[in-house]
Image (cartoon, rainbow, N blue to C red; front, side, top):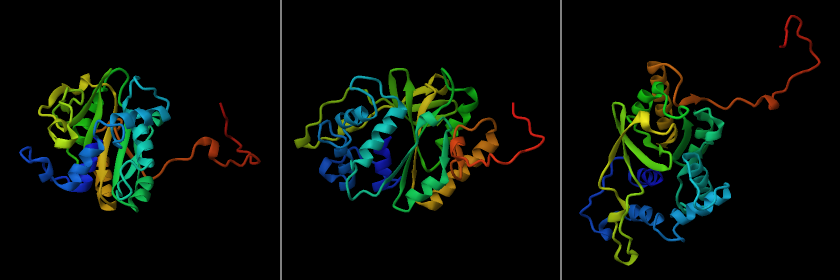
Length: 267
């Protein structure tokens, strides 16, 4: 999901990889993205880097990283400059513990002043499985030009979901064994998966994280309009909501305790 966001950012949504290309024939921006994920402790987005970032958010090596933990770990890496000083990709990573499944336009607009925006939105769309009312909404999100899919899976099984067809979704399995990369030979084949798998949405764990790539303010307005239209058309509780800004917590509200409200009974 993160790799796809970086490809969108550097090469555009319409760029496609030619698997016949030799490594040194690939665009330099694409090679930079691949090398961020090298299986080496010094690579900024390697598994080693994510484990170190996970420790900063309370996850020890060897424990399960759920979608929300991945967002928190990547936030640490992004804040630490993992993407490089010349990369202007902004990050808006929400906290899944908030439980409101909402994109706040004011926060997104502020970050867009500095560059294109990568949105990570952890959600929980059910108790033990995805609630049936959310299934058509999840499927529809894949049709948005800003959509990067979502990460999730089943207990102890993480996947990257890239497309939908009816009530089924297609995913890539990052745990497929791949040959070790020989950096000196610059072999890029094992960075990619040659097969997509299929799963019914009703079998997906309800804890999942959506990703969106937003180019500018007009793109954000388009995304919000698409989400609003989808929620109105499909009805029920929205899988992803849109709001102008956050409401203040009750503790931050300023009530005047000196005034009496006659006729109001507090229970």
